[in-house]
Length: 237
Image (cartoon, rainbow, N blue to C red; front, top):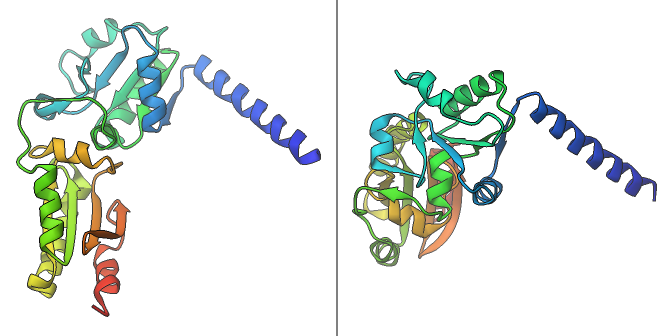
């Protein structure tokens, strides 16, 4: 009984703290489902893509505006927003969206939400998006690769993702060590967004998945110790 009372008290305090924070103009990182639900609850949601213009041109959430703190017309964009309504921000990681949300909070915007995982989470979660190209790799082709190879290591990322770039030399090391025993495929958002959406398993970039006979051995949200994990998984194979 005492634990239930404490739990209810904690929940009430947490909710009050959240309300106070937003009344003071703070921002919050939220997961995809909550981000999507809040957007759908708005008649004309204020969605901001804080990536660069070249990234935005390739793919983005439908209805999103594109600007960040480095945009030449930044003040004009901010002035066009309604500070009393929620603002929804995303980028490819947390850096640019974080800077933008901090500035908007300082300017008195009542609710600022950042999508945890950015565009990777949105498209990787199968939510609707705009793309100006057709994916180079389709889901049937992806599945065929898994069927045709005993071991497959999949690297899912973006050329605009800094952490994704650090994966490349590690993949080359793994490729040199295992040769034809391990098939490695690299999927980039800028080339094959639809297969990433169809997989409905990507939350962040990079996402790394090791398959054995079509079944997942491990899935990593982020780089971690990829080389060691692959070595452990294939040590006795």
